[in-house]
Picture 1 (cartoon, rainbow, N blue to C red):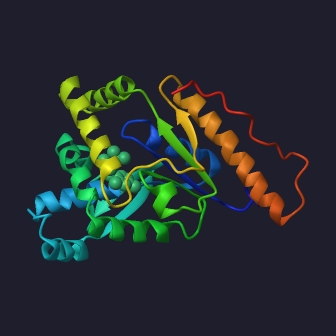
Picture 2: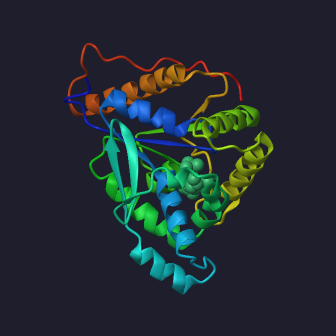
Length: 251
Ligand code: DC
């Protein structure tokens, strides 16, 4: 559908469980783009550190550990599979145990430097939708389209709890809420590239929008940007249409 048009970089940031990855995956599929869930990369590092009993407060030990970590992302049936040193860790990195530690591990500058470098390489070809916490602010400050997702805390707790239930993981809502709020706090107050809304990002409150509605809003925005980018290179097509104003519910 987008063939002949220049490919762009779409950055999607926001708090935990606002629907970033679901939207990013669907958007990438519709545009024929690659979806990169950067949270999976930080989760894979956390998994390695816990399994190898690395002391995250020991810079030398951390530096050695990071040299031994190789992360690959592949795609099977439109879903991302995360590989840590050639081992499929896609399921393991989603365990509640990882949730407890991932924000502390991802607050470390050494970890961020390594991940950001790899993420930038992934973006060289463009045609990507990357989701995370610092994509529009740090990884790709020049991204062509930036979305910042927010949602009510209770909606996020319910979504996360249902997700865990579906996986057969039994955990009460209070623990889910506590973990979400703690991660929000660590992610948005860390010294190195804290979670922030980029000034030029469009905010989407996903609390009361279905995934389909979220996708439609994102698609309209993406198509208007892709059309703009393409029209800068060649005369605008007759079918060019600008994105409509976005009907967001207030935050
Ligand atoms: O999106 P997620 O819940 O899978 O992310 C897991 C953690 O990784 C999150 O709590 C913060 C961290 N993260 C980050 O610091 N920067 C990113 N670009 C993506 C995730």
